[in-house]
Length: 411
Image (cartoon, rainbow, N blue to C red):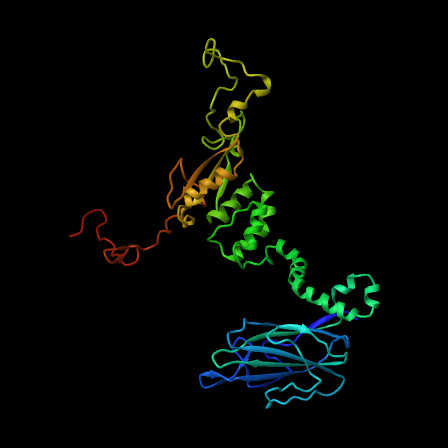
């Protein structure tokens, strides 16, 4: 049958356990009860019957998870199997599991082989002892059924020979030692998942993953942020040297929502018949159109005639590889944030480009900083004039007294 295992502590409740002089601690561990300020000398627990979900009768191993044993304390497990009924236990005796049905495991070991004959039910016994100052603590107990040992990987002749049971038990010792290594190999794939990689220890697996991806992790990021950004790193590399990529890098590392504008997108050649506004559809060129115009830009021994393929290129020479980055002053909350923005731009921008950095503040400067909807708004205008505005406490046309002599002053 397919091998498997059962955990006997479920939600820190230890169902099926009968406790004598043992208690369940606040964290769910089994420990000795106290008498006054000291722990009692002996406590026992009996668990069962435990049955395998697939009907297996071949019980294999019992293992447990517990704290390191304090000085003067001991722990010992006992196993028994039966098809019906519980083996006898004497809680009042100093040897409560003395009946031959119980098989003792070596004292102070947290795991061992179940040497009892195959049966439908498994029973477990546990004895904790103390000199009174401290108590052993058991957090979990696991029962394995089915034979899943290294004997499976040997040729079949070893399983048919007399003494194969002894060989299987010998190989089980190696399985206990190498089990942790096998578990690590089995869970290797999770180390490559940013959302599953463990963070315990130094350096953590997240640091290891970031080294593989050449993706720097900031110490100020929380573990959740590190996991999320690492999961986006590979996709982010595909956006490097683009506007979207620059904006994302600035958001991740500097915490700013940047506006990035390619200046060449606003440059165009003026032509007759179009509708252009000065400063919007027209601009001064950085150089003459043809490179050398007689009487204007042609200088003896210094002028050149641009080839036909380059005609008009000088009109866009100053904006062809330039872009503008605007960041809000309210976003610059981190220490040295503006220097950090420049550092990111220098590192992530295309090597052949240049940029200008502008901080958007709550003011408007015509010709320098005046973007409608960004740092300036269009006012709604003055409120409509009211009819009958008060004049000296009287509303004109409503409370004023008409003059007797419209053409002359009133006395």
